[in-house]
Amino acid sequence: PYPRYAALRDSAPVHYDPELDLWFLSRYEDAAVAVRDAGRFSSDLGRWSNITDNPFAPDQRPSRPLAAVLRRLPSPRILLSIDPPDHTMLRRKVSRAFTPRAIASWEPRIREVTDGLVADMAARGADRPSVDLVHEFASPLPTVVIAELMGIPADRRDDFKRWSDGLIDGLLTSGGGLRSARSALAISWFFTKTVRERRKNPGDDLISMLVAGDPEEALTASEIVAFCVLLLVAGNETTTNLISNAVNALFTHPEAADGLRADPGSAPAIVAETLRHDGPAQGLIRMTTTDVVFDGVTIPARSRVLALIASANRDPRRWPDPDDFRPDRDHSGHLAFGTGIHHCLGHALTRLEASIALETLYRRFPGIAPAAPPTRIDSPVLRGFRTLPVRLA
Ligand code: HEM
Image (cartoon, rainbow, N blue to C red):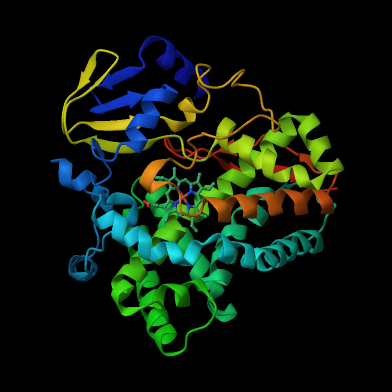
């Protein structure tokens, strides 16, 4: 997509596509405004649009009993898609689970999970001619980590992984609405039970942190359940893609891979540059609440806008030699995690996870190399790999 972004930035930085009924902002400066200015660019798409998307493909309508259950579920307020003042309050309440101290305290468990996955890969045969790194490493890692942090018991991990994958698969594939809805239902029930248990018997896990707190700041059970589901949706696939994109960058930039072998401490910089250069989230969608003028072009109120953050991160007006992969550059200000009030709540966790992943992988398999051409996932807004065949060595 990067040549297309460059063409947009140069010749149509504020571009309207009538077929998609969508405005594209491709320059850093403009995309940053749309992401940051929550007053003029709402994240609450439903409130500002007249569009009522039906998530189910015609041959995939839910059976009547399931549809009835889905209708009766309280429709929870999802942090990602609400505006202030509701967002301000909810964000404050859930942030207590993601303090720098909490994240630092999780590091030993993240290392343990990562070591375990690498050991499993080796046990299956380090000399196999081809191993799919997405399937055996990048995909399970974030799910197992978040299950571990949420204190999900070991005997429920397989169910948890299946539901979580189903949820995300369904969101990514057209016609997957039904599988997604079933998984959402199963996992919501599971989280509802877990919240009840943790209220009685709190532990040191993430769900217990959400349950705790003084009564005025308390979250309702359905807020906690919705937030836990959001963590899976917002955190798993994106982290998988970040790890895969970073390994792919190391394959195509051998000097960076040599740097990592010589100094495992360079992993965080490689992760940061991957986020800027080839980030998992390509664009963020907003609705204008009022007419907005960019460069003499007026975007009318109630328009859908796609802020192309991946294009912004390669805008030569902001970054010197933006197409070069240079871990040692100054990455501050990249938009891979958004910016402003919705700035990714999991950014520190995912950077830590991806850094540990690269470090561990290259320490255990220093000669890791591509075994066959990878295949990309098919999504306009998420960038990553469906398969990444490697030789371990
Ligand atoms: C929000 C990207 C990993 C939880 C966001 C946003 C972006 C983003 C761009 C802002 C969305 C917007 O402004 O509309 C990413 C990327 C990740 C990642 C690229 C991995 C490479 C995670 C993880 C978690 C997480 C691991 C949690 C475990 C969240 C939450 C929000 C969010 C809860 C909503 C924050 C709010 O609306 O206030 N993420 N994310 N993310 N992310 Fe992440």
